[in-house]
Image (tube, rainbow over all chains, first blue to last red; front, side):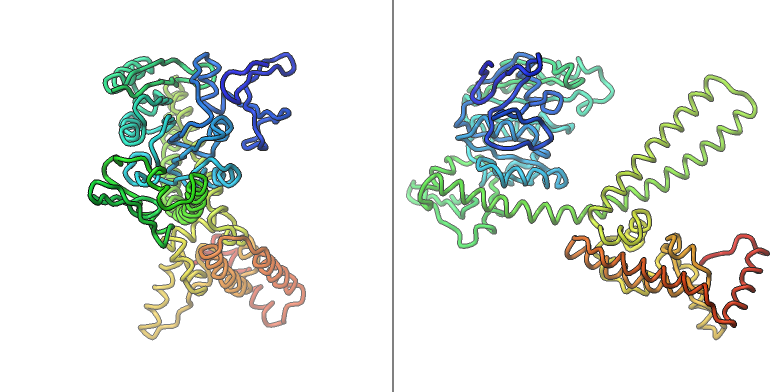
Length: 215
Length: 292
């Protein structure tokens, strides 16, 4: 058993190494519960995939997080295990998956659910505080613009940001590599790009980009 | 300067930030928008009106869950629009598939080539898309109109929704209108004849005719079944719109009525059975009777 960051471990199970988070809570999306751990499935969560690809962000237990594109809460449930003394402001536009998400929000004490459009951050500007970490997983064409707008409004100076980019949702005709190059360059114009890489084989044609807000 | 925040307002007076707690936190939460980034950190200023940070977050979370649950519920009701648009697209897709298949058959009669094979593959793709749309319509209609779906099935429920225009409008329709939704043409034809003083029959059923409970009954009983079903559908639409929870007794009563009507066939009145035989004869002659 190896601790990676707060409450995130790699444990051995039936001869295989699997990623887990230490959790007081039960299964949320059908993941296995192994003792006090919940399996963090990389094909379901891009953040888990990023960690297994070897890029680890040292998320602190007391971090305030703005999570854009929370959907039904697969990744948020694990992130909530990690920031067990912090707060996650979780934004999602679509009502249908948020029904399930609300169950999670009722269960955990560190999740603030917001049914809002991430492309209009001023609408929740009087709710969300300054955060240490902005995480975005939204399959929209203007996702970079959305990321910038939210970082401008809510990320502390020196704070971290991660965006999961799907090539096809930005440009379905261009080669993924071309799209990714363009995205990384665009992000680099305003933010410090700490790292980026592919999420294969867990998620096809996806990359993560880790940025930092440095003035 | 003044900012709208979830717990009320923050105002700047003599260079100092002063928090004012709203008497209606739900309302202030909904109006917490500001065009520019706040020049202060919310929980810090919030401490002026909350006992502790714990109190601050506990209250924020409570209000957020309350407002979001209400919003989610309201949004889901808007999914009727989604179903209607999907259904319209599905109709167009069906037309296209039929038309393309016909053209392909024409070509294949002349020559089968790589191009025709590719053609066929594309049509198969469209058919897969059709199945997906049908599945999605079924999923959504079952969720937003569980009572209508339980009584009428996904297809009829979605059609009724389409004809009415929205779940709200369907909920306010009288049963008599629901009964003939989809048969407007023959209804107005009949009404026009009546106005001219000519004998005419108004239609017994519109979309709901395709329901097996109506279709499988003999003609003379269909009117009664359609009327009964429409009455229950009208209740179902109201339940779905205002409550959204399934009441199984509704569909059960429709089934009972159907069994009742079907059994009645075993001991028909003499007159009726004569009439029925006549109808059967006509049916055989015409082969395809019009239902409207």
